[in-house]
Picture 1: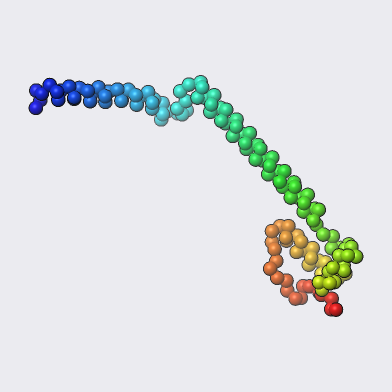
Picture 2 (picture 1 turned 135 degrees about the vertical axis):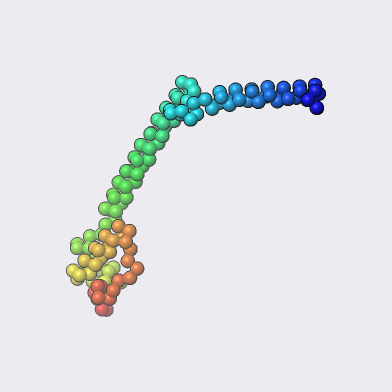
Amino acid sequence: DPQNSSIKKEINKLRTLIREQRERDKQSYFGFFQKGGTISSKDDSDNISSSNEQQMKLSQTEDEIKYTSSSIKQHHDQILQTDFRNPSPSAIAEAERRGIDLNDPLVVDVLEQMELDKRKGNIHDCIGNDQVHRTHP
């Protein structure tokens, strides 16, 4: 009934609520789709600037970690690198015990290539019989 006063009061309350919500929406979303973002105060811009600085520091720290770890890996590889061209007497004896002739230049070439491939991440699953010369006991 259009003449009912309680219904009119409820309709007016709803209209007031809708109007208030529109005002809150305007304040909340003002400039949201404008170029430059939604920064509304100096504090917000300072927080964003601080966050950007932290991201830059984090990125620099990650770069330093990568550089340091690669330096450590290179140093570790240099330490572990075997000199097959000038083996020690104990290395020759150990190789002979395993059936490998370190005095054969072809064997040394294959071992050096395997060592290089291992450092590059290319690990051989098997070696052809024609590539390795073994000593016979």
